[in-house]
Length: 195
Image (cartoon, rainbow, N blue to C red; front, side, top):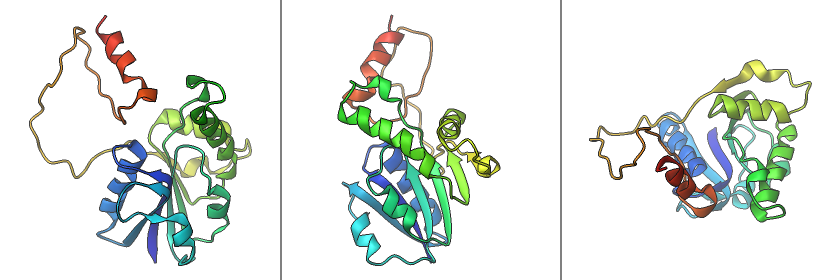
């Protein structure tokens, strides 16, 4: 038996990738763990098509879901001893240009939530994500008691001195977790707090 941590994409410097690696590090003391993805830029992550060649129904699935998954139907057809899903939330499509790749991927990801009804445990990273999931799943979904919130916590964090690297004109302190890339609009957040 192995734990299969799967996500559509597992990439470095990304929330889902970091979370997948975090859980791998947490669980590898107890089980054999394999990271599996449709796409990854991290050495050692097995491609989903390769994994299919060696799938064992005694494995446990730990599915990180956060956007459209090209393999969702194939993955859900596989038999697993147990299925766990960690829902990271999906950015509402309205925040992207209509018809763009991100708009379409987020829209499809939200639509496909209705397929995710047969899991032994549901985990979300926040109450907001949990509510988003429950809003999109079948209205007859009865497993809401098997749904817990588990915000990201780094248990492997070493004590370090907190250093301020940039100051803001605002007295408000905030934390940003995520990749700093254009579509996240971090520059707008910084500009807002500097007004």
